[in-house]
Amino acid sequence: MTDVDARPQQARSQASRQDTGEYAYQRGFGNEFASEAVAGALPAGRNSPQRAPLGLFAEQLSGTAFTQPRAVNRRTWVYRIMPSAAHPSFARIGNGSLRATPFDEIEPDPNRLRWNALPVPGKDTDFVDGLYTMAGNGDLRTRNGIAVHMYAANRSMTDRYFVDSDGELLFVPERGAITLRTELGPLAVAPGEIAVVPRGIRFAVELPDGDKGGDEGLARGYLCENFGAAFTLPERGPIGANGLANERDFLAPSAAYQDRAGTVQVVQKFGGNLWAADYDHSPLDVVGWHGNYAPYKYDTASFMVIGTISFDHPDPSIFTVLTSPSELPGLANADFVIFPPRWLVGEDTFRPPWYHRNIMSEFMGLVRGVYDAKAEGFEPGGASLHNTFASHGPDAETYQRASTAELRPQKIDGTLAFMFESRWMLVPTRQAMEAAHRQRDYDAVWAGLTRSFRG
Ligand code: FE2
Image (cartoon, rainbow, N blue to C red):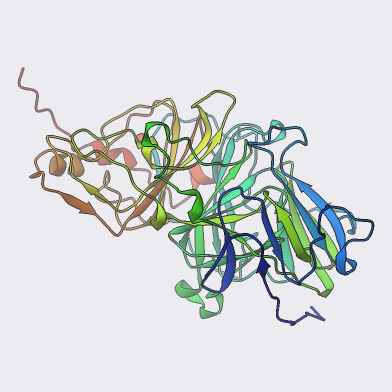
């Protein structure tokens, strides 16, 4: 790589903004953001003047159809050094461990499934090389369903960029911070935070700790690739105007650009496959932008947790951070649900999740700590899949403890579990079913349950 422009890149935002860590961010969810890395990059009063400012090219990026209602319409205007049309043909490259719809490599399996953490890569692996698909559903060609991937990387993407034309990507880091260097600016994302990159926005994943090597240099986490309607905030109903994930806690990037010459590779996920093209410039060359189609990040510690203050364990929908709605009210294409630190105070209540069978399918992961329905075996970086109507709930040890515990106020602390929940069956990939890190004895966690019926 040559000719990297090292000029300091000022971020001057016209929206409310807060400096958080290394980068300046703009606050809000789905706002009309505006940001300039160089003063004057945004034209005044119109989107596409005869000549865009500073010799830049104006370009619109539409995340929704032009005519969708204002409440869901998402588009952003970017002012860039080269129009994104300036590139040669894409050609197919190998998909590695990435899989896509239709998820039909194996028959759907009614069994409860659980995995240990994805093994640490043994060789130099960047984010794209480290993608590993666990399960999925729906049809990316008609834009419904999700894919669940893991990533494990030990080096930054250098001279390489990625763009997903099939779905938006929800990042849930479990080990190691990552920097998402996106077309609209950088987002620093650490475990405990999550980030979303909308479909069609180019980015590179950098590992700020990658040069430490070994376990310290590892970046690992979960990805929900959402083929359906973009994630948004759930309605609050009787909760009122505040609580759960509040709009003000979401952070969008401020403009920052790369003005560089030399060959870089842009890898595109399109139609379920990876394609690549060699560009002669960085695709992250946006000097200013305005609009509401933008990546964002969110710290799960900001989530205002709702729970019982009387009795019973409420449905986990109270823990929904983001939802991808379907055409049917209340029926999500996908929900992103977290189980963060919280107080349990319910009286005469079995406090962990009850035993249940749901029509919705649940893929769970653990960022840190211990999940309150499983005493052991569900490790950080691991995963479980409880599909449509799979019977599940607390393991025998948790049941025994929770059904006999003295019910004092109890803080569940130092933990963060989460769920990707989907309206459709999640079909695992063949590699996930055959993986050495799948726990083939998972059913045994319920084997210790015994009868206590006194009828
Ligand atoms: Fe469940």
